[in-house]
Length: 199
Ligand code: GRF
Image (cartoon, rainbow, N blue to C red; front, side):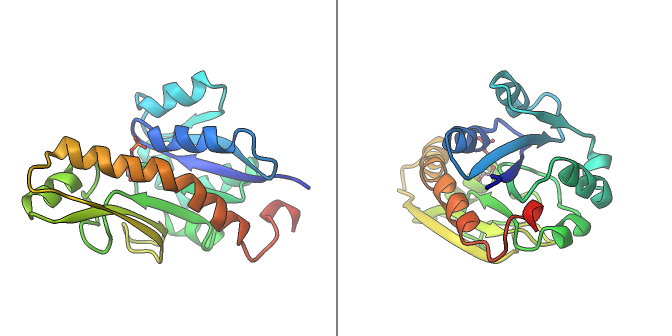
């Protein structure tokens, strides 16, 4: 049977995207078809292409164009999309073309500390400033608003009064790298429909 094909969207260092690439490298039913970025100088562009992964870089205008992205995904026979540190809003047309087939990871326990401009160290800074005693990660379906889609899974870690932003980032990343690939794999296995290309 044809493998389910994932597109990874990333704008940053791409530690999560690379972790997913490693996770699925020897998978018999799922494969990473390409990495898409809106930043030519993002770490993920270099890391993924050096591993021989097809890497597509588009402008912010192009990635805001739903029809354009639907066409790219169709050209590569994409079944499922994973956002891993991707900072642009997903256009409505792509969401409609991939209902409950686009997921995101967020470095906090949504609905707290989410939304536009809540990304990276801004999130961890806000957690420390608010003296939170715990934080974590949220994996959720993507809808037309930043960080508002249906939650799939959350994992929690403590925040101690002495923790710096570096400590919080490290603990959250540990959760991300440990759990994200398995949640992605589980969601894909539970898809109610046959892979898009096989229909
Ligand atoms: C992660 O913290 C993820 O939760 C968020 O963006 C960050 C990306 O980190 N959406 P990396 O680029 O995967 O290292």
